[in-house]
Length: 250
Image (cartoon, rainbow, N blue to C red; front, side, top):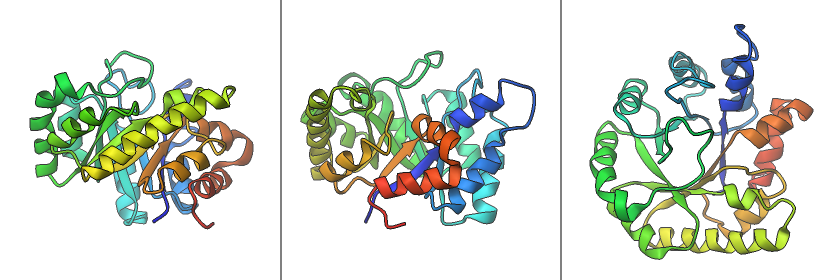
């Protein structure tokens, strides 16, 4: 199956939040993305609500339930009590757990499964008991033992942190080295029975090589690069461009 695309709406929300006005509409652009064939929508609600607001979550949930029942809602965040309660209320199809400090600018590393595995086990079980798929943010550094420990948490998937790969847009040799490490991590995860997601600084330029190296890549969630392209091409055409980059026939 081709890699699916989940559109991260954080950047849209951040632009909206510059003014106390309802545009650009998170719901409206999410609808356009799904109409153009995105498989789902992703948000990362942070405690300070600097982009996605807690009030956006039931609106996006209703959009998917009422108009796009085959699409998925993916909520990502640090697994604090408030976040977990939010997930249990909204019931996304997938929860992606990240090890961020709530005040940091963006996700920039995966979990240390050696020291945090036991912390994650009851959290993963709690979410799965409610019927949510759980994905854990993971460094794509080729660490096979870390992948085994991720599997031991009970998670369904890992999401490869692709920030270092995306950051090599002007250094293709280094990018190829990082891509191979990502591939090795994915190979190890697949061998353990974990499905693979990926996200961070992915673009229509660097996606095809990632999909080629990880042909069983289940899903990518993309926000910043996709939103930047949407300013030039429009949301619908941008989603189609990213779907093609994922290997989909559009």
